[in-house]
Length: 79
Image 1 (cartoon, rainbow, N blue to C red):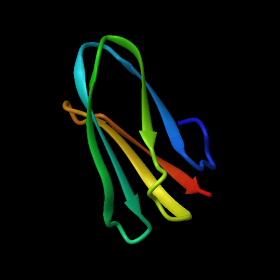
Image 2: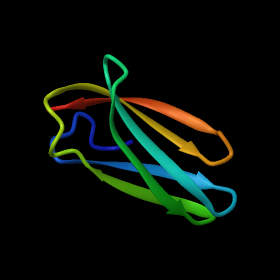
Image 3: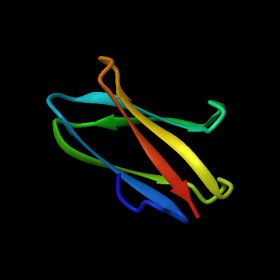
């Protein structure tokens, strides 16, 4: 994840072995889902840009998961 801390958007990069759907979930510190979006990804490198303008200043968690269940979680600081 690039642009962290971030003000307007974050850029997520993922490397996929085959075409898939990526689910991006942003939750607050209490575990409440703030953003839940779905993105088609091709084989190879993919980048996903997420607009975070509407998020309040604070700390969030960004979960990136494919339809096979592989996932990663990153901490996001929104300025």
